Length: 460
Image (cartoon, rainbow, N blue to C red; front, side):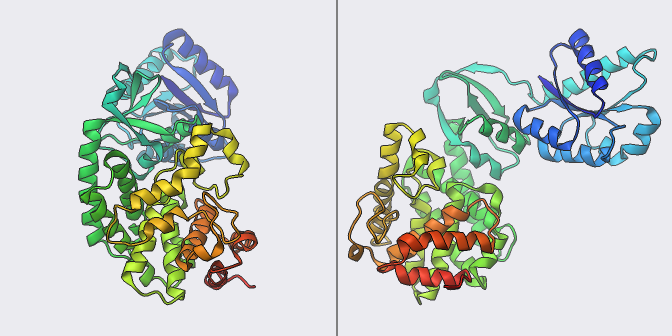
């Protein structure tokens, strides 16, 4: 179990370290001298069971720092230490009462009774951690009883209705997220930085989760106002469920219903926005990845199609469904920004992963064939990385074989991949359009590029 001490007095670090070593050796102490070091420690070295905060820290208000720590890491006890008057003056009552396990540890360190107070205060914080199942236990499992879920999926929630596990070995798991208990996104980030891409859920739990979340998303999509600030998060959550459903059960009636409802939501929002820049300015960049790129692709496609005078709802839904399915068969989510089979980034992957990447447009097309309400979307998806100069993949058809809707979709997915996860500035857009001009400025793609310059306010 780990604790984080935040103090700019390194002598205090050593004093606390020696106390833990001598009396509470189960605690590993990590030290930080300022807010940045503390946030980095939470993201990389966490999770932490509790914090120890020096009320006499300089150059920062300790109350604000305490709230920042809890906001970033999630609720956990803070042991405030220092002289009694300093704690009273610098630690707000609101912060102190924010967790019933928060404690005061009074200086000086050499006063009578300090050691007993230290043990009592720290053991109280440890009790909170154990009550919250913070100290994870190892479990020997049959991996056939579990199914992976992408770690990025959990950033969309604060709590999760089922226990979630981290695989340490093929047959040894630990519980990382307890059912219905608030968890910290920084904990997820710390594992993501260690290249953990998936967490695991029991198969029976996943099926119950997918069914209940699908129902919730459908209800919310039908009720939410398209101008509501939460609309993008709801769309992200709906498409995340959609991708998980397809991975677990294939194309089912629930998938078809949720696909149509999500597409309707995107179309309604696009009709109520004056420009694509308005959406790009509002869109949350925190949740970048395959799902986010899919939604941005849909919005870009819808605005291009409006400029072309395509008012058919069926055509608009085709573009949305293609957006949703384009990357569903990627072997690794980190490939979602790759546009070329020659991209140096692909060299890090194994041969079978590279083959799956090159095949993913065809795999997406095979899924699309099951969406029988929308003709020809399988061809759009099979061609979504093709270019009019035959430098795309996987089949390199002649320019005449690529329809205008291919030009719309291919251009939209390229821009979506380039801007996903970033603040979209004029400089960024100019750079993207300039890069596209090398490969997209010919055939049926040429008019689409011209429209994009207009939509995104780029001068020729």
